[in-house]
Amino acid sequence: MLYGTTAHSATRNVTGMEPWITQDRRVVFQPAGGRYLTVEEHTVELPSGDTIDDWLWLITPDFVNVLVETADGRFACFRQTKYAVDGVTLAVVGGYIDPGEDPLTAAKREVGEELGMTATDWIDLGCYPLDGNRGAGLAYLYLARGAVPAGELALSDDLEEQEIITLDRSDIDAALATHEFKSISWATTVALGLAHIDRAPLP
Amino acid sequence: MLYGTTAHSATRNVTGMEPWITQDRRVVFQPAGGRYLTVEEHTVELPSGDTIDDWLWLITPDFVNVLVETADGRFACFRQTKYAVDGVTLAVVGGYIDPGEDPLTAAKREVGEELGMTATDWIDLGCYPLDGNRGAGLAYLYLARGAVPAGELALSDDLEEQEIITLDRSDIDAALATHEFKSISWATTVALGLAHIDRAPLP
Image 1 (cartoon, rainbow over the protein chains, first blue to last red):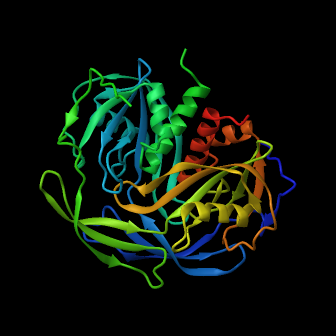
Image 2: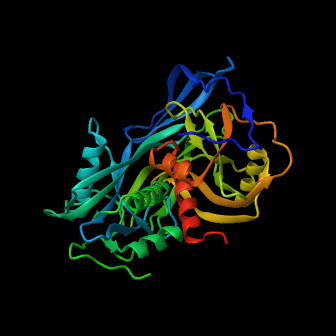
């Protein structure tokens, strides 16, 4: 891809876009149990040669989110609560990746467990750190197309109340536009998934 | 909005979608300086009546991200590095909200400081916790339209190398589709901003 530059273009400290180098890392906080959070401090060397010796780094479990399009062109979502969210929110399929599990395998497992469905087409929507500065886990986002019922719902291990709903395209567009998917990775999954569908409609 | 239900619909533990109740909270980790991270443990009561006494909660600074559409219909972005991201990434305007600062004011300030621009139309794309379970800061996302140069670039206080670039619509669509906006809030801002533009094209 060729990028244009505007008349207002400017370059700051660009010396080839070198990455920061991690010189040292140590755990500074880990609660008992420890699965859900580890806080590290990193010593990092900047391209300028300067060093920062207390850069905070958050380790939380990587997770998947999936926008599920059914074989009849609707979207299987949830209406639920979530501790960090005010009121009721819409959500997409999601869950932590098990230790050693491949992200796509986790995505398929969650669609099976949470919706009792399988899908024919799986599109990778990207893998994104939650916090560009401090990590905080990777979100692996997918679009699953051609989803159909398959087997029983698993007994949920989710702590939140949730209800499966399906939305048609105009409903999900409206829900996204009015911020009803209230956690950032859900909004991202829906927006990127719908953009993919618009680029590559099914025959 | 009316939600349809699928033949495969199911309801789990739905008793009116009651929120979890925070009964107690205490700080369990705060590094020296403390601006960038506080870790709390919350005692929360679930709708079932059960209690969790060690629910981790992350407090990090709230921030803004802005997709900037110039008056001639291009998009002002950055090419830059970021510690949590592999290689070079595309990015949108962004920064922490100052203590006591209104999010929209912060967004306008960042567009001035990072691009030396002002914009005529500001669209609220929503406010989202980074982590639906544990908080980790709120992302306030905006689309700024009709942006034009105004004044000088501020001396950057960003530690990363960054270069201003402008993309036309086909370039930014392609960059989003190939996952070149590598941190989740940037991808969200671009995807939601472009969806808004498609719903509400300028005359």
